Image (cartoon, rainbow, N blue to C red; front, side, top):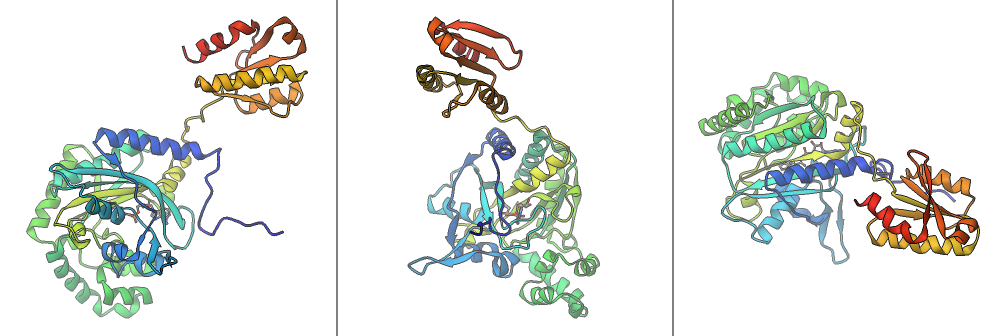
Length: 422
Ligand code: HAM
């Protein structure tokens, strides 16, 4: 019968590599807690309208990339393409606003029907944060410093912070007019998608991945030249605070990001040797999003990192990932059923005391069991055959040194426990 394969654009994370994901998630929890972030877990599917209102009708994500479906009652749902809208929905639904800044983080899968390639999947994993309740530019710098410090502490140093401001609802409209006017005479030279973007939301033309379209846009007026004095001042303060934190950044006036909810600050963290999918994290400010979703005017800023891309980046520089936790004891019974039963019970006793322990249920030869113990990276093995059983002892062998000792039954448990949990 034909075997069923994983769906195109999805990927299994296998036991021998899951330590990389665990390392990155644990590191995030560790660092996020230093900055006061608390975890939130929102559902993987939501109403489509959340993303249409949150991310924007004219974006590639909403137009082409969402996994949408009707449930059995005809509700219009979709798999979440990103985390911010769902977190804002939960923030409003559960009145999470308080007097200080509400700091939330999340990890989990996101789904986008994109063309799969290295570093781009239809299911990918994000680790993200959202800081809700302040429009102060120092918060922008703090959030950028958080993602920056995360990469440094995770061992990825060769990164570039790209920064831009997309202005506010007032000045962005003016910039769109300037951009439209500048592009109007050449619009037919752009790809059909861009021509559609020109009419829907001209800013979205910057999302196009086709090099010819990008080349035309290089000549276009810069958004940072068109934003209002308040947005200019906000950007200047963000930069000043980044300077204070000694974080290098490069201005990228084309960084408008593929989601409509951004206002003012946008940023990306680039690891350039990843090729075309080189954004390992990205984010920005969204001062109107909560209002757009039915709440008060509460500003916020956040980012999300792409875990698969970070794994690729760290692998490319030869990162030494932490080893999987190794096995403390491997119990080997050879000979009678009695020896096996003794070790079967001992295995349970070790586990109950918090000591990792394995036993071969098939009772294979000593040689095969030693081989398995080696493969499992067991630190020690306990060998019990009929001869030892008769004498009331076991052989305790250190797999590191090869030293083997005879230990009396009554001393064994306490001795191993003392070695493992001193
Ligand atoms: P985003 O730029 O769409 O932003 O995604 C964040 C990160 O997720 C990207 O920088 C990239 O590393 C990773 N990523 C995105 N799509 C894929 C994919 N198809 N395959 C692999 N990795 C991918 C957001 O989602 C915003 N919600 C970020 C944010 C949070 N803004 C404010 N708060």
